[in-house]
Amino acid sequence: MPEPSVIRDVVASYVKAIGTGGAAEIAALYAEDATLEDPVGSEPLRGRAAIVEFYSAIENLRRESELIAVRAAGDSAAFHFRVRTETPDGAVEVEPIDVMTFDADGRITSMRAFWSPEDVQSAS
Image 1 (cartoon, rainbow, N blue to C red):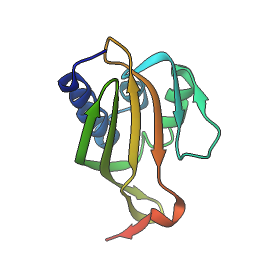
Image 2 (spheres, helix red, strand yellow; image 1 turned 90 degrees about the horizontal axis):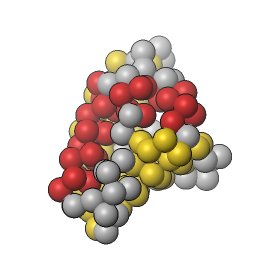
Image 3 (cartoon, rainbow, N blue to C red; image 1 turned 180 degrees about the vertical axis):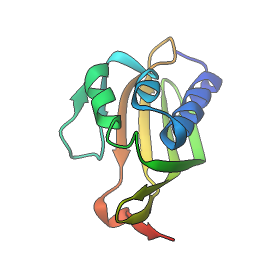
Image 4 (tube, rainbow, N blue to C red; image 1 turned 60 degrees about the horizontal axis):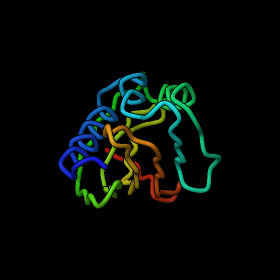
């Protein structure tokens, strides 16, 4: 099990990559056979190739992100963050709460994002 400080560092790297990184950079934080469910209730994705494809949807958009709070316990973390994305229709902002599990090497083994379309706000 990774140390809580390792988990917090990976979460911080993840949030930073969501704001400025490419799909491959974000997916590199995941274990090869990791799962991703974003948002919770959608069909879970499995494996790094599927995860790269998922994040490629935001790769060419202007984004910024901010970590608001993180809690690490055992092999897991729950964290609240803000992401602002500029789309062709205008800027939007959402503050998901993600729950992740990690392997002994500090790679993400599962990610579940808690948010819904009603949580997406127009941003100026």
